[in-house]
Image (cartoon, rainbow, N blue to C red; front, side):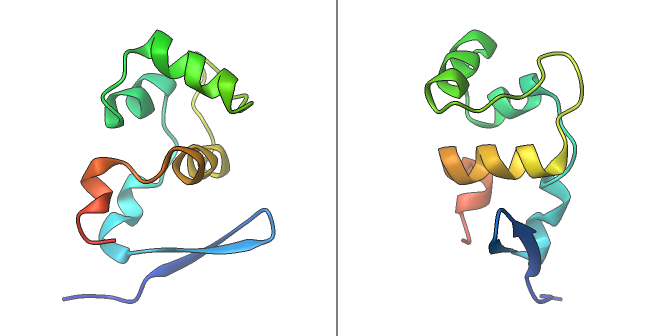
Length: 83
């Protein structure tokens, strides 16, 4: 069953997330995000600095910061299949 996309308000924008991927937009750790982009943690940290994204290194990353990474880096490959 295909459900309607879920709208998430972020920095004055409405982001539509397909319902089949909403479980991927959740609180995560930096290592999880690096793995989604097939990057080593230190390479991912360098890219975050390049884009001036400040996220915690050892604490869970809130959903709004996870979305910021997704919008800056592009959706992870496993989400690009149907978007």
